[in-house]
Amino acid sequence: MNPTVKARLSAHVQKLLGEGRAVLASKFSTSGGNVIDLRGARVDSQVFHKWLTGCHNFAVQIGQPARIWIDAFGEVNQNYFGAAKRFFGKLEALKEAIDDDLLVKVDDLVFADAFGSLLEQANELLEKQFTLAAGVLGRAVLEEHLRKLCERHACLPPDRPTINDLNQALYKGGHLLKPAMQHVTAMASAGNHCAHNNQPELSAAEVRKFVDDVQQFLVMNPLP
Image (cartoon, rainbow, N blue to C red; front, side, top):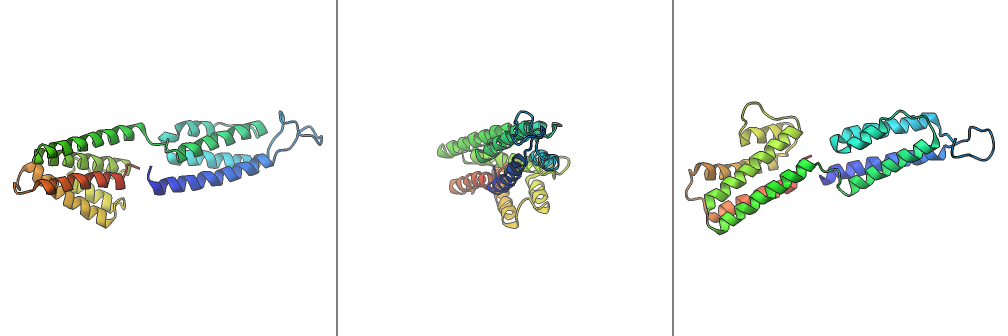
């Protein structure tokens, strides 16, 4: 998970946990006695439902990886103390999932593994002096990662976009800073030379740098 996104999610879930503690502290008895019977105890209805709505909205903002929390926090419940305790426990579980990077999408793991395998193959090809083939693999990984970034940010150009089209869409949408955009342009140039074999003098060292740059770009620009 992107460190900046993770920090923001962690900070917000901590805020919600603080609100949850205030909800639990508002418990009261409906029996009229001094001793609170937890089986029938209630919590302040207004703060409970405000907190529950905040939890649900938070899970919705995370999206599909938090589906089970979206469903849980979307349940309509009366303001029983026991229900508030259950929701607090679910919120703690969500915090642990964020802290332990368990909200990473399964398909992200699959793509990361596939891309890693392809880049390993590219390095093996370089060792065997199949320079152009290694560059073609690196280019394919770069293009597909840019495509996935565009899909996630809802800025995928129509038809059959080139690497340059994808790069510009991400830059114009504010999803890549100018240095990163320029770096992609340079990488794409090297990858295109390999794919079209129109610069035979491209050295093995240059292709190796290109493959290493692609790997670094994936690390610095993970899928959101």
